[in-house]
Length: 341
Picture 1 (cartoon, helix red, strand yellow):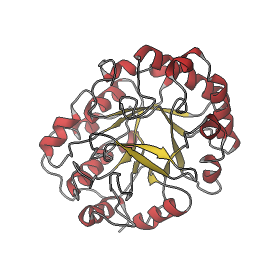
Picture 2: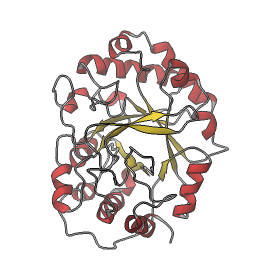
Picture 3: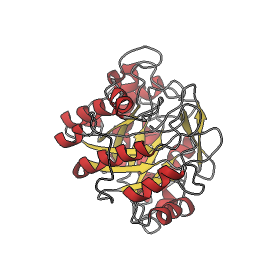
């Protein structure tokens, strides 16, 4: 379901790529809570979806820089982009917490939609033990100040996203230490940006933490520190009801996350989802577009936001539906369901 087995790497100008990993992702899903019973049903076996209702009645967007990428997506869909997905440059503390990118590019006067920022808990030379000790608290208070300075104190922050993927340098080494790190970071950010929304974001279909082998849910830091629960659904692709349902009910699958979110009284979101044309993906797969729209429609009242990951970089997932259109059947289906045409 989402991306082709890769993590994201922010570029100096704010763009980003994704680091290759051993298995490919066919789509990425970020979820939280508050799903209705009808929404849970969308994860169960059902006849192959037909045309169904069309349109978007929720916050919807895509990844990209402002204005070129974000405005291009608006042209493709024929509607305003409701949320932009961005990634910080994680080379050092300055770029993580103090630099103008991405908040200066996405001030409300430039982009009135919502902002979702993927943020590791420390730069490449950091570690979870130091984080848990409080050594980084000052940096994160600065980050909250940066968000507030540019009018984005209410941004979604996907803190330590895909923490169960060994390909990310911030992956969980020790679950208790990592949770303490997460809690301290959230507390520090909230001290200077009290309306920030914290997303807790696993990689779906990776049921175990990479080093300890513990259950992925052992890394949950507690409801007090999480506003949105996220999941990334990945390789193998969901190409029919059987594969969709099988993946959905894994420990780290979409249905499991939806149920958890529902039980814990939170909103859900899907900040990155898309096709994968690279090896191991579902290629041009309008079935997947149908299933995602079906899920969003069923749970629109509780959906915080969703965003398509539009990418054409070599070595990445090759999910692009627009500029360039790499999957024409799926692109047409997306416009039918998510656009105004």
